[in-house]
Length: 227
Image (cartoon, rainbow, N blue to C red; front, top):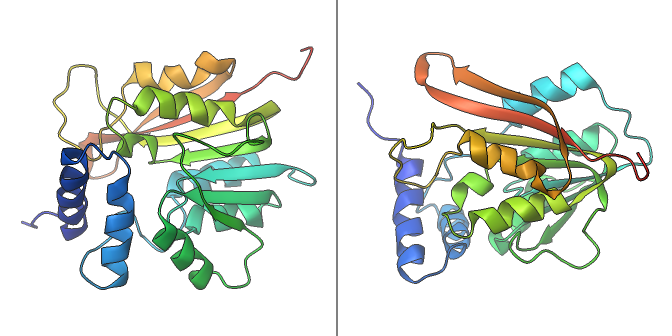
């Protein structure tokens, strides 16, 4: 029998400290800074892009010539590197300066535009600016509140004709949860469409070897102007 993942324990401890200070995002920087010093483990740092993103890209093979992509809460950059490799002019952001510094160091020749930014207060000029928006595991790392604000801000990034791909842990309404992460319900997944996006496909995917653990992979599209 294996014990708890030490990375999950580090994240839970640092999140609890930040939330006690009424700081819902500060634990990300604390975690990445501690990991840089060798005092913590980032549980989602797998050294590769998320497999559900890899599968989606393999299936869709998007024509990215001249298009812009953005990766929300990019962490150490593995998902962003995949999106850039598809041909998107890619922005990747994280609230943690240490995460961005580490991503740049890990990918020194990357075409990705890594920058520090806060999903709860995104920079001017990003609204409706991206043809592919990838949100993988970030919203589930925020409590409620301010999760509804984060969901709305993710959706606002999608350009006319653009696509939003959401990957998140799944739970049923009413299931007990003690985050982070706080897995998303179907209603929360549906809320990504509240900003004028149309659902394309919403998948509830069980993890192999653990039928109680599930992941959402949800694709949305914003209609073309005048469409």
